[in-house]
Image: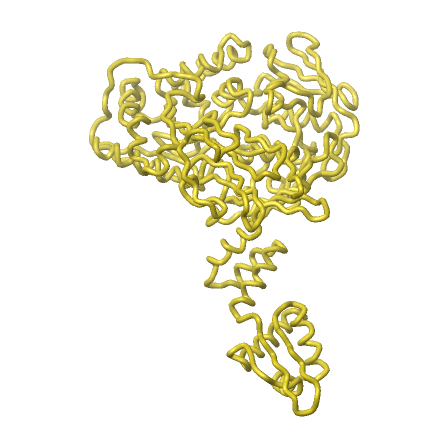
Length: 587
């Protein structure tokens, strides 16, 4: 309230001195502001401390002092909004700016990058959308998958550098017999609210997993002591420890369903805890009581504002991030597409799509864009029509429709991994009855979808097919809740990539009913054979792609460039990096 009154008094001074400078006396100022000389002197001291005024006082009767106002009304407004954003009061800042909301982008950008104060290391990353769902076991986009791994732990985990399976919450496990596994839990593990992890938390979490197709062979989970659980299967699965590293199997508090707004403010055991998560920012803070090595970055702040898309990370939508000091001296970014031809942290980027000195790390993404034919649609009941679709929407033809600057970052593909090659079974093709109308669904908040889907619409229009585009929320897309003929999507596979391809094909709700042409018996057979390791993920992809139900389209180039101060930073398959092992060496 006091600062507001001081601001009002300053604005009155601006009215008195429209030129922002003039000679005056303390008494004249006091008269103008209707206060005492003593109070006026106090106001000038406060304004000088804030850098608002320059008061050159001249002693002696008849001498006049000089007042210079260092801020105009607009500068004062921006300064106040900047302070509110720094305090996390984004709603107040936007309300204050009124019709000048465009200023939010520049103010947010000034907050980006890393800072080191008294050995406290913080990193601010831009992002183009909110992330209200960080709830393992629900449909998660790739950025959320990365983040939940920073917040939660599973019984086991995958080493991102080596691809090896490692102990996590379970320090040891053994296979009791073909269908029983025993896992031994670490003692003294604490949730972010201070409660100690117990067997019951694991029992509840894995029992919940059993409702998912990938975990449907978990028949029963029960305690075998305070720090031991037994998993009983209905089918032998030699890869169960690997399965339990999946993000769906992360361990939650047993009472998580009773906790208010758990999706946005989850409680885990991981190296980072959620401090804030709202429409403007996600703030993660290192958990000092983490059972593993304490995270090196003390704080990670994800600032959310659509206009920051040219500096955002993840989900392929103009996904670059600045991890640099402000003002930018050296940039660091993760990227794969549109932003590569824009400006990153003030540096013009002209990237050729080939390794160069500009990039410290680069590879073709493990995954990419795909089309899925809905088996419920009358249009795709014959493979001949699915072949026709592949001919018309062949990625080698579609890429010619992309705008020239980004074409170099997209690589047409016939499979889900860059090292694999699959194609549809050869044979005749048959066009649908012309004219006809098809419905293509894609999930919201993904700018590249609109561009790619629009190109598909134009191509099919030349053949007399009208393509209706349907944009829906991600959860509805992932579960296939709308009526559609085609689904446009994207996927990225963490290490071990081949295993995760199979886990995705057999575990994602949208795919479950369609990759086998709607034949539940064939799907269940594939699932059983994959678990038994008599059907590899690569063979499974050949089955699915060969029949034309899933049609891979493109891979993107992913790259990382960091400032010299960044240590331990490594680009992972999800387009992010592990926060807890990254740190900034002081200059």
